[in-house]
Image (cartoon, rainbow, N blue to C red; front, side, top):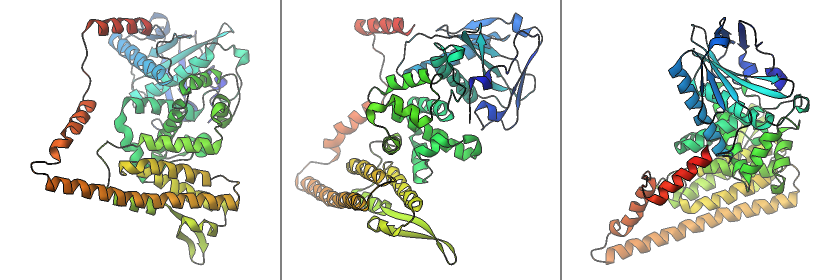
Amino acid sequence: MMTSIKAWSGVVRTGSACAALWLAAGASGLADEAASDVRIEVADGVAADQTMTVSSSGQFIVHGDDGPRRAEVAAFAEDVREDFLRLIGQKGSKWGLRIVVRSLPADGSDGGAVLRVEVVDGHSYLLTVFTKPGKAYSERRLRDVLVQSLILEQGLRRARPDEVHEGDVLPEWLWRGVVEAMAFRADRQRTELFKAMMQGETLMSVEQLLEKDPSELTQVGQRIYDASTGALVLTLLNQINGTTRFAQMLRDLPFAELSAMEMIERHFQNLAMGPSNLEKWWALEVAGMASPDAMDHVSPEESTRRIRSALRLVYVVEGENGNETRDVPLQEIGVIEEDQARLTALNSMRTRLISLQADIHPAYRSLVRELIDRVTGLMERKIRSKEQAKRVAEIVALERSGELLAKRLASIADVLNWMEVVTPGSTSGDPFKPFFDVLDELRAPSSERDDRISGYLDVIEGEFAR
């Protein structure tokens, strides 16, 4: 979906006594809550007489008649800003453009939240967020719009109107991914979402993410899209110097009219991130986001069985009675003649391997990550038969090493059990108690220290956060 500055500019005519803001769900870049147009009206005289509240950083100026509501919106906007800057490694940095938030009173209409961008004096920009209670309004919707404004502010703060290109200055995958990445950093319990997605084999590929229009998806499809874009953003942020490169990519959005892949390759070129490499890093990031609790895993034997089951090619062929589903071992990859069918089967295999990360035995997780890497290598479109056979053999060898690992772990368990039986007065509960105590301490929230050094550091951090 195209989101250009021209698409935002002129939506509202300021300076008039009564301005009407029409926002179609498609034009907003959000197609989940408001299926119909959202209409926000500013009554006569409101724009001129509203009082205002300034957020703690000074970046947000909130207008509205309801004082407590203004304070609530200002605090919420500041929280979103802090989470955003922390995500891109710019915590404590100064802002360049103010963002105006107009909190309008409820009047029985659908309400909602929308961003408007307009040129000021021919050389600067004004970002305005309109918000109004109603069935189309939610905290999530307001967060989405605030994140959009913060991303745009990164680029527009140093851009002249004649320098901004006519294309997509705020890609759908990017702002949705930033919102999702912020949510994941704030709540690690969201691993259950990625675990469920992987077990259902519903993950999208990077190519689909960068090209898909989420407005064409169902509500469930949009949720999968959002989560997948979040994993993609975290993939970029977690690279070497990732936060610095990602922040620079945001600043360059208004200037370079490039495709999503071209923009990523420009700013992460030191990593040689072509489509296949990016796919590999993204797959590993999703696996990490679905990592379970330290004690939540299956046995080595079950882990071996699941790996063996995952390393099979499932594909569809046209038969006499319609489409037929076939299931063959990886060694027989040559029987799949069509390139697209082979890629689909390999992508499904990789998704199954990623899902294993959710509950496989810890000793097997590095092995599964290696298998994900090798299967991704098989998905290259132009690969010679000899090289393909070599990579298949490497994957088979890794699978067999997993079987040997299960036997070794079983032998270790037998030795430990025998030692417990023959050693009087010894039980497994006592020697392992310190381990569980440490695990409980790590899970417990840290207490606030009141010594002088901690107080001094808190004061210094507060100064830099202003």
